[in-house]
Amino acid sequence: MAKLTLYHAAPSRSSIVRWMLEEVGEPYDIHLLHLSKSEQHSPDYLAINPMGKVPALKHGDVVITEAAAICTYLADAFPQAGLNVPIGDPRRGVYLKWLFFGPGCIEPAMLDRAFPRKEEARRAALGYGDFDTVMNVTANAVANGPYLMGEQFCAADVVVGSTLRWGMLFKLLPERPEFSAYVGRLSKRPALQRATKKDEELAAA
Ligand SMILES: N[C@@H](CCC(=O)N[C@@H](CS)C(=O)NCC(=O)O)C(=O)O
Image 1 (cartoon, rainbow, N blue to C red):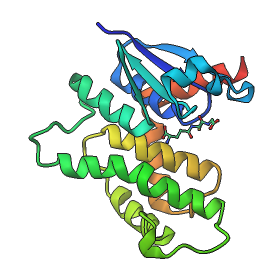
Image 2: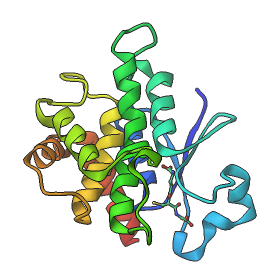
Image 3: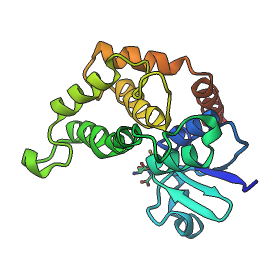
């Protein structure tokens, strides 16, 4: 089987992919980068990801970057893990919506709030519209659950769930019972617990 290597820094957005890999359950290697030493800007790593950012995933000869794209790829490459909604299933459209909504709407809404612009942008010009709408839409989506797609835990939960966990940790999100209940459910997943423990060990080393 083609080898899986995660270019990783702990903790960082590559922890999203580490969680996904633990959910997938296939063996993988870690290529650790120290962001504080600017290893992400070394010529060797820029050949992997010219953005100079983690995560990147190598699967055989294929290199994938962008956390949400990697999670989508892994879910489709290892369907036996049950983390995708396959092509042909009418639920796939909504599944893809949530995979894009994480990095396309939740994350920029959160970070624009944390680092406000000097001049307020027009709502129509922002892909995410406005912070409150993004929060309301997300809260409604996770309110009933247990997961975004109902009973099925999927790659979109890894992507959206990671952003919500991170936003709650750094107090970048409003305190909403829907978010804490959803993140509480995710925190019980053995794969997330394993990924968190491994990252804590890496960060402490
Ligand atoms: N859009 C990228 C963002 C990746 C990203 O910003 N990674 C940060 C770590 S959380 C990074 O590598 N920062 C180092 C740098 O920019 O020098 C993704 O979702 O994968």
